[in-house]
Length: 334
Picture (tube, helix red, strand yellow):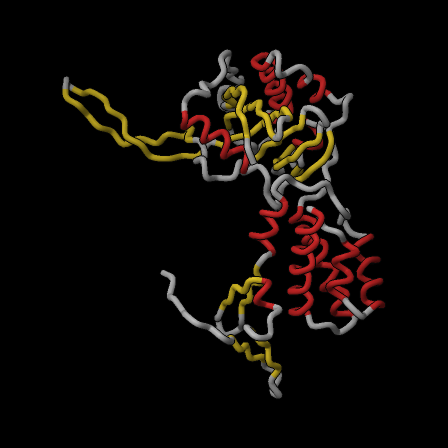
């Protein structure tokens, strides 16, 4: 994925002062560490928790965003103010900096809005006392996340189609936890994330498996495999494909499962996130097995279904043995 940065600006939202501090100048994109930081943050907005959707043309957010490539500084200030007008009503939302980044992806202009929550960290401070150098240890309460950390919240918007990817957190408003960003800032109902859809699938599979006396261990393993294959092929979760792979020949269980999912919060074939296949590879490309005796195994999917490499044996006493085969080398990883 090639990201070409065009413009970027940083606004300060220190809730203790009660007033945003808007920058009147853009960040210097000729500075390498700034480019690396911004690109990393954009990339890390695409996760298993990321939701997708399309902004409404008539929304306040789109109205304030319109024309931003030609009037980047002022438009970013207006968007930040719009966001802050909502955000400041929360009882527990922390102070943060907000990045606005204009960039090209596959020759299409995009806008990223990324919130960077502050954290505390220790640092030194050089002072002078009685004309002598006095090196102090102080707490800096406005440290930004490192480039390797996933943003706390943020979104990217395709400026041509208004399709967006959203990473959001719930904060308290009038005593109630609210998805304030989607509900109040962009006024849009996003599709569930991969992680949210996966939770609904697992809950339905467990309930139907119990009803039809199916082995839960095998079912969950099949779910991961089915979701992995579906995302690899289509970029999203196809529930019909999942049902066929998980329940195979048990048509009654398959139909009961689909009825269960239809009544849940699962949304079939949601618009895919940009890094869907990479996310799927990391999250579902391996079976993670934890046994009652404390042993844990991480098994790639291609190995898990290969009887020449691994075998699960049901013993007469009800226990299960796992046989690992044809191992050429074992290394101990510290």
